[in-house]
Length: 423
Image 1: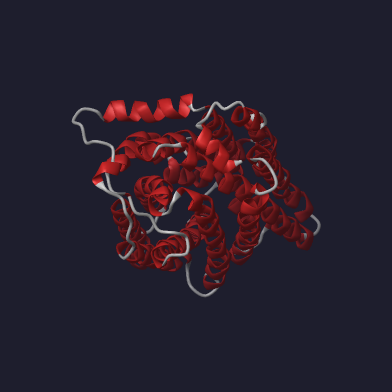
Image 2: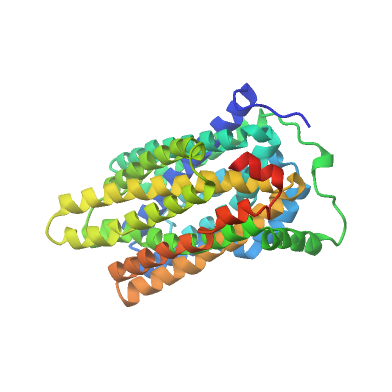
């Protein structure tokens, strides 16, 4: 199977399209939150339900989606998912113009976008090893993550500025156009994926294919530890992220522009984290890098509840704490994420990539709707700030499953060739 290097025009087409997709996603995430909190006056419980609607699909169809994606060409899957997301998001500005927009429509669109995003993301994480040779997997992931964060720099800040001029639902048009541009970039991307690279389309084997992916994650000692770590991390990170818009715009009293600025500052940290990851891997073990990344993210997560305490007397200090906290959090998160994604891709056979990624997402993203609902319920029952402290405490535990991962690699429990390529 022919592959393209990270320097090829072909890879750059895919890279540019994914950057636009990430740009649209960040704009859309902010605009959706502002629409709910500011325009439709959603409370913590409703914000939690909105977050759950965006991610519950990983529990509902995450596992079969992995088996289906392994049977399909990855690029075509991502193309049609990008187009479906564009059409779904366009519904919200139309309803706003007609005066029919309500929380029910937000829930429905979030659910539809979430469903097709399952297919897009599983295809995307399985596509890099198809597009580039093994030695370019880590550099490719670093470039993709770096520009995803660069997109996040511009996205929330621009969205925040635009929402001072036009309503949040109108800003969602940018999200739809970004998804459409992603579709077009994928349409002109070429790869060497062939039918022989796909899992066989055997009638009645869907359940067996799903089970094969789950068994691989369960039995591969490195990937198993990553799955547990990511599941715990995403649960508590989602609790915090669900309530941050409520904290910023209601508890402290900032506007949508400040919320966008906080997300943009986080993206600066994300760019730094993504740039540091490949360099760090030249000097340190993967376990050390991932552990430091997770602990760094957990430490800076405490900025959110601390900002609420400062906001009672000094809003400037509160804003500074939020900006610094989001920056540090994403530095750590990206150090961890670039490293673990590259590690998983190298340890997994190509015909199992979709099912492996779907199994991971089932565990990791499947925890997110539960966390979002829990955050909304706890935010209403005990308050936003105490709930955020629970998220901080839980984030510290995310490092426990991977503290011995270097010993597992050294013991040779994974494929020897993969070990040499990631150490």
